[in-house]
Image (cartoon, rainbow, N blue to C red; front, side):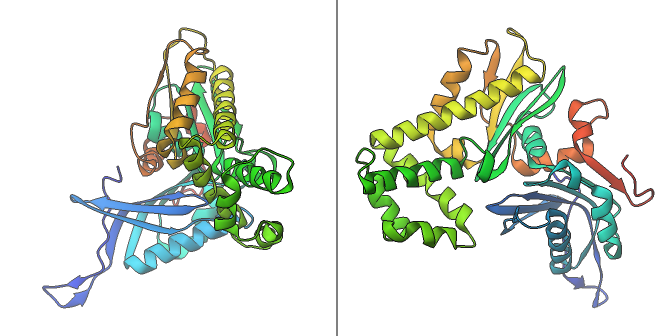
Length: 334
């Protein structure tokens, strides 16, 4: 969406002097694997990709640094900023604090929310239902007559069941069980060697790596590939992941007020379900029989569409209270 944003770094060709362009909106989708940035206006769109954020570091500080870098590299001022971020706990979803940290950049308005909210808006717009956002981690959001229900999203140490990290970790464990002789033979054993090196050194190599979470999550691709060619162990892992994702989705549906027969839409965000047909079909099969009347389908828009929609949410929509707003004129939630 980002209807009014444009970045210009050129000078004034007529007068030969440099002028500061005005960016009406800057939209940021900050994930652990990567961060997407988009500005657009006057029929022109600019999209960029930056490094992902680290959930073991203060999120707001990272976002403030990121905004500053983007604005500096663009040579432009920004009026409105919308951010959907992974790892954003309720205690730190403070748009006022973020806006204050950007005081020297002349930003007027900030909308800040967890990426589960922006993912929901991207996938379902304002329609009631559920969206499960599956990437390195996973969080499921239900929106309905009873309000908003968030399920899982507890990070790789305690949750994120069915995520890329969860699948990748299960795949590595299966490889090590095969290596030990404690589990069935699987092609994941050789795949793990290709990805991580000698299996008797794997645990130390991964534990000491700064990018250990993303490295383990990346192994989910190997699990999916082996499932596609009939590896029984890999198939079992993918089926278990589908069961976990479906359980979270059905829980979010129930908690947000769904009753059998109610119209609702269930969708997903992230590449894990987009790229894995087996996982996607197994997930949908588990939903269909237990939630009659629910439409299941791909997202209606892109993640950055959902990020911008936070700036235009109707005040009466259940998700409005899930977004932290701050305005330069008041520096208080609106």
